[in-house]
Length: 401
Image (cartoon, rainbow, N blue to C red):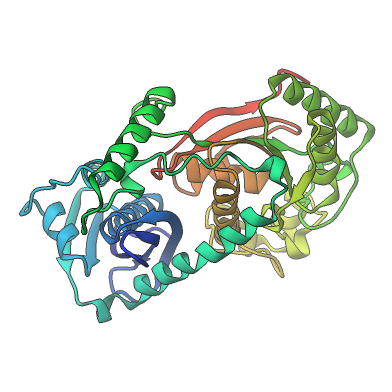
């Protein structure tokens, strides 16, 4: 179901200002009864204002994905509301790119209005922001658990928007060092295309597993665990050879399912690194449709299957929806970016998680899940930048097979 009019409520916070920061955003239907989307993310060290803007950006992106034409934005940040309404100027250097990005998103809607609300009326977004800040502990745990040889060098924040204080003074030499670091990072690693992204991204090399009997027969293959076929093992070997030739890869991360692990093991052996398993990269749970063809599932549950095709909120009987997949894949992406900042990482997974990561990088709606084709053992590349921008470098490459 799509809504032409939606309400976006967003919030951001920082424990220290600057300190560990996160944002939350929620999209409601026009009556503010049904929650259509939720977004939250831990963004590292930042100020309250940076986190507030990041929450606004996430909420507008979610509204665009739903297909909204008219958006009412409600926030308890007087600064953001007044700046986005054009009544206050954006003066701080850290705010300018975030405000510009927000305006570009606003331009994509027919109408957007901004309203200030008291904090108690913004409780849902505030809760999401606090949950995101709680993720700081999880990110630290993930980083500390990584083998030392897999950790990216700790070079400090590459993006001034997530490291510069805008509400309290710091010694001038800190600003000078940060400005120099940011300038060097931008010069060495300019963002792609027209995104304006800066800093060194975490580059995810998204590798789909090789062939299994179920994929050969074009059957729903979710939580089942069929092994690779002989051809699937050959595909994994060819992909591993290609990745080894690329080099400069910090880690191989895999779905826990056997077909992905087999493919990941081949890549890890060729690269000389261990495999890390991340449960969030597991394939969709297709429930009662597991092992069925598209036609068999449609005949078994014709009405439900027809709704499932096109509505990411609908789940297969006893399974999970694509909206649920997005939530856990989004969390996995945050873990990957937190664990391997600025590094190249091979991510071995399945059709839906890889499509979802590409969807997150492109900032597009769920239609991508139904329209994008990914071949077995294909490679796609998505990059996630420290300032929240992202880009897609490659989709469905099979030239090495």
